[in-house]
Image (cartoon, rainbow, N blue to C red; front, side, top):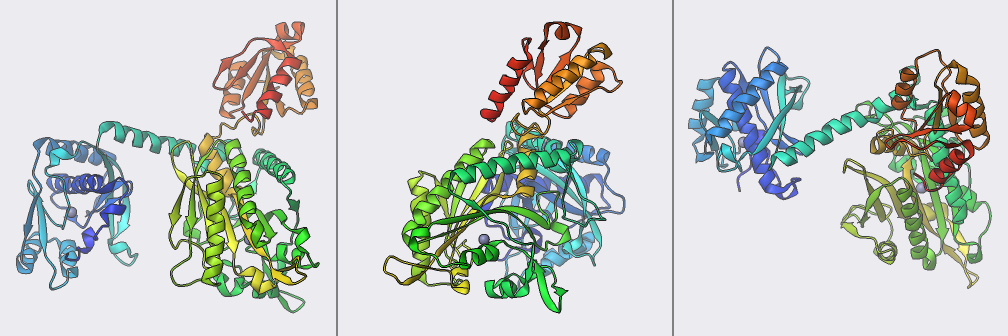
Length: 591
Ligand SMILES: [Zn+2]
Ligand SMILES: [Zn+2]
């Protein structure tokens, strides 16, 4: 097969999300877009436009920017072209003919793509109506096969992706097999914009990021802090029940530690520069593992001590390029829900199964579905022996199978020092997020000489498991904000109840009610501002507080409350004690 021109980089259609049929539709829609633009704006020069995961685009050179009105006109013209059912016609041409054609039209970008086709390559055109494109396809039969599309936006794009080149205008669109599919997709986009954790995080006053503090560094505000505290408490309680022990390790350590661990050798570019302390280099930690190992190695261990499960909500710092930082989801400082398990070979599969069990428990509490991937030995660059890899991978596989978890094998996807189970959460919008990871380390036990004395009285190397189940609190909370849209369940809501007096005469009763709830451990705020009741209700709705208690003289008289549950409406009047019990049941059921 000939090499594709750069404008239509040779796609691996089997890997295209939605498959080849959708690829054809979107590629064809891109041509229809170029057809409409060149008809409506004859001065425009066309560059290229491939399908992308979310739809398609086409790049155009034009002095004036395309306006939203222009997009509407282009879209209307595209609909006419689709209605006309123009066939997509394939033809092969000589290089000389292709050159002549693009030179005459002043299409310099196409001339560039043409020059990229090797001397022995096939040069092909696809023609629909008046539009001819240098293209190797594939396309649908005719424009009428494009059943549902929409232009979404325009953005600047440098020619060939280089800042040294001129800026082109990239018109984005998307296309689907049916209108229902398109509608569902557009709805999802709209929902994900509404739920964007940076927007919701600001509205609910959960966190902020400041230039003065530094990029990628999160400040947790009181409400975000409460959310984090609740997640941490839940996490800690569950770990204690499952035989974990908490440890704490310093944020800063001598560079020597990272020399031994191999971090300086293998991860230097994600570590921050050394600082001088008493003439010796120190580093801020990028990982918690070396500290946990030092704790283990502080004493001799026998097989009877194992397994040992050390856990730490350990804050680490890693360099990320500023361009990839994204709210809480991609940061430079983060707290991992980290743990290292030291065990014998015989215990490994049981330990992994235990970790999967705990993971399942945690993810269910946050109402996530998830999917597991078993990542195996990389083909070339890997540490340890093939036997060790086989043993560790088999233990991971056995644990997955024992738990009856469906999983896919990610062949060669392991880290160079460890086979692992990676787990992707599926959020309320159907998007996948890789969070939990469980790895069998084949490097650090050797580098640190992590041993135990076996029943045979001899020293053996420990098997070491790394695992983070939420990933990091920053990223997990960012994703959780988008999963819930900020509508946290009662057990995690920073404020569970807002008491709103119906008029100033009910202020005392409102405060008394709030105190009573507080003493019962309910997180409550009372709104005594000099505002209309309607404004206070709207405010509590914007804050997404699960329960509102509007109390007036009638409730004060009867010693009752009439709760409003967010999303469920008005509930029956009840005593305050009955309300406290109801909130308690919600918390217990994690609703
Ligand atoms: Zn094409
Ligand atoms: Zn680790």
